[in-house]
Image 1 (cartoon, rainbow, N blue to C red):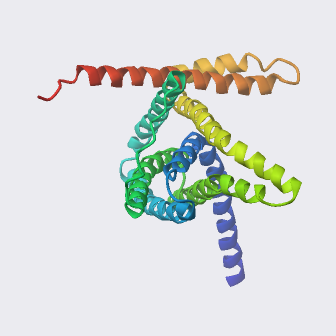
Image 2 (image 1 turned 90 degrees about the horizontal axis):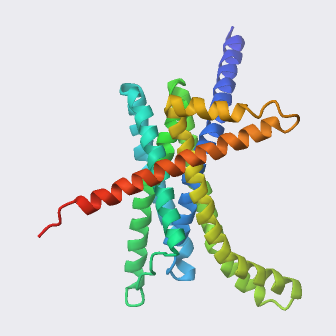
Length: 300
């Protein structure tokens, strides 16, 4: 009897872990836009810090990120338990915010403008570190909230145990993934400089390659993150609005009859149309925000 109960328990655990793994995979896909932006933002946050202090700063921000998620995960679970009707509006707001951020970044790229570098030469290094850490943790809170809300939408109909484990899994994996990759990215130029000083010609070649690729990697991360914002945000919005979802489904399924590549083209069309929805929604919000700022009465 005890053996049968143990086997049943193990089967339940295996089934739960399968559900968690499947939902974590879907949630990771849906949060890809935020992840790309998170990488680019956090890699930029450590700029201006001394090379030997980059990793300690990243570690401090990573710990702050985990603390953020320790606050956000219970809050998300409370919403799921007591006010589940709020999940869809929060997802829509999260998708709209992604599209808004993407549109803002696209405007910056088109204008060719980037935020000017901060004057840091006269600032105490320790004060600079603390300021950057606090700023990065504040930014992380917003991005982490988006990740948790999007994940909550994936697990909304699952059991409480599956919700808890999936949210915890995504929170930990995203933190390790983002800050692990940030640590690698900010040290690419150091690795390149180290290899470039070696006597081996092959080491020098790899070193020069790393030094040349580091700034391009940072730029490409920002571009990829922006594209992902439109695709993910637009996908959330189109699934939330029935008419748009039906229109995209009809447009994408029209190619299914094509031999061999019909399903591939259908997926591409669906993704591109979600991106179009994201771009339109993003620029509508940007226009509204800018108009609101102009109409806001100035304080004397």
